[in-house]
Amino acid sequence: MDPVIIVGAGPVGLTLALALARQEVPTVVLDEGPGKEEPRPARTAVLRPDTAALLERLTGTALDHHGVRWTGWRSMRRRQVVSEIAFAPDEPAPVHIAQHVISGLLRAAAADQPLVEIAADSRLDSIEQEPSGVTAHTRGPNGTYWRGSYLAGCDGTRSTVRKLQDIRFPGRTAVERHAVAALRTELPWTDQALLHRMPPWRSSGPFAGEVTARPLPDGAWRLDWLLPPGKDLVTPELLVARVRETLAGWTDGATPAYDLLDTGVHTVHHRLARRWRDGRVFLAGDAAHLLGALGTQGLDEGLRDADNLAWKLASAWHHGPHEALLDSYQAERRAVVAARLRATDQALPGLRGGGGLRHIVPGTARGHDALLTDGHLGRGALGAPGAYTASPLAPRHLQGEIPVDTPRGAPVTDVQVTAEDGSFVRLRDRLGRGTLLVLLIAPGTGVWDRKHWVSAGVMPRLAAAVTALPHPAELLVAESYPGAPAHSVLLVRPDGHLVTALTGVRPADLYAAAEATVGGAVEEGVGVEAGVR
Image (cartoon, rainbow, N blue to C red; front, side):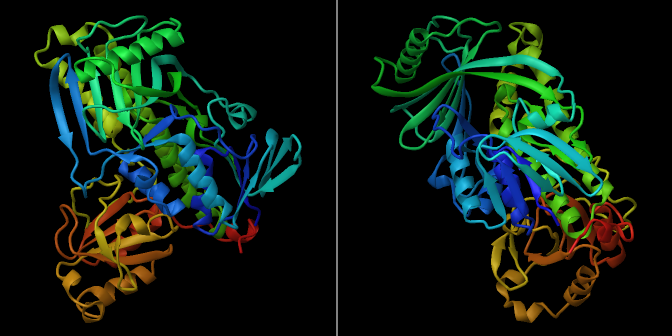
């Protein structure tokens, strides 16, 4: 079976390669560049708990060692603190990290993974599809033909893959613009992010009334000033003046000493590809969508694309192509990103319009701050991980289904579980292996040796039901899960989204749910035709 070809060696492409390798699928990553990324301290990403956990699984590295996990969030308006949120030490919190550091960690992990081949200086110039595979041609010093089973375009905003497949990319240009500075200085707070709207000091130059400060390692910070609509030039002199003015305003006096590390202008576009799949060719990350206004993070969604696509491609690679499963990638991911863009577009006029509802609806200003907080912290309609509630893979007519605190199709809560070998692990640690997860809620199992309960009660019947499922599955046990009664059974997808929760052990319902999750029954003989080993 030919490897999966991945075009683009940024964070999304490398994440997809490592996620496929974790499921024993070989990949070739076509890297247009020389094989490394230039450090840019002002080019950073805020990772939510689910995407941070994904990168930690794939790289085997705790991101806290390379970025800053926020201890809290503060929202200010003029001189008043509107809201302040403190994260407990064991509470999931956003991680702020430089993008070149993310790429470096992923490249290092890929270099140690024999199933991942990175071809540097390989620029794609043609794609040809056949019923049994895809051929890509690259030019440059290492120009050649590459044969693959599938191809994933993770090649960014100006995606060559998207253009070669003649896929439209409509949307809006310059939805927001920000002047950005990375600097090292001492502020009155540490490891806490700040959103300051309408600061009381007098602004100079083409700047609007909003600035965000987000901590980085070694005493560094990234500061973002919202720019008004238009194309006003932000000169180095104007930006330095704004840095000094902002730092002085926050420290109630003279400008503190600072070391300017990097600057730039970040322009946010909103675009959504019409199609994310064309036969054996897929789009992911910035090649498929652009978003990022109001504090949301495009890289987060790109990493979720890779996580969603990886287990479906792995299933097709190992067991033969199943069109319903492969089609669900576009159906699920495009719907989630489209909903995020709609929510942001609906909020933008009131938040950025200079008037709008704030003059006629009491308390609207505080509501605006709450919306922006949701975007920055990855919560609510603007920022929370999407739920695949209308997924074509969702099971139907399960008589034993019960509600829990996690809606069907949403990411599961990361609880401690007991694995089949008796070890205690986090639920998220078992994701991304290509297997379904069956989670039994059994209070008391955490204090008893596994040998005393593994052959008692409902366990033997549930173990037999798991063995009989139409897709490989792993049985896990948890003391509790939010909203789940004792002896309920949860079925979880390989990417961590809840399929269903059942009351007790119901083998027929469990089988039906698992079969729906992998796209229904695989057509007879399709795996042989595709050359599956």
